[in-house]
Image 1 (cartoon, rainbow, N blue to C red):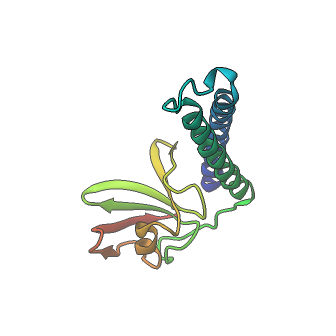
Image 2 (spheres, one colour; image 1 turned 135 degrees about the vertical axis):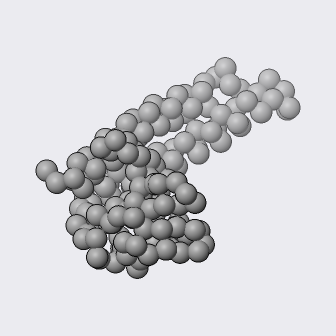
Image 3 (cartoon, rainbow, N blue to C red; image 1 turned 30 degrees about the vertical axis):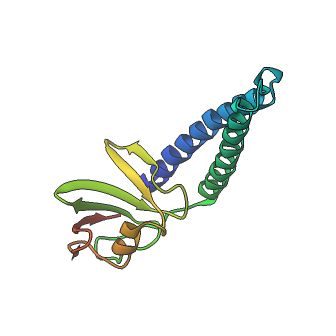
Length: 154
């Protein structure tokens, strides 16, 4: 199994774990919202309304996470050489404001960070300004805003 396939396996496992936890929380929130004990005792009692908002928000988050997981179940990542331009699927080490950081440019689950081979890898989506900055750069390139230097591309 190549390194990027191992990274994808770690990401899928993290997304599945998050999905399972959030599904349980959403079920609990739904149960609380529909529990007869949550009924308002006065016109100022908003427990039931708050519980229903929480349940609805968690249900939406479960749907989004299910879509992210489906995307990653089908995703394969291309290999990049040190001389290649950064594009979707690239694993990139950058010096960002004096700190080394690893990013994976992917279509979904932006902001999720996973531990992989002794480093933290953060997922970036096209909605991220840093994703936009990195796209088209190569090893050794730098940008002013945000101040970033590309150390390695895989």
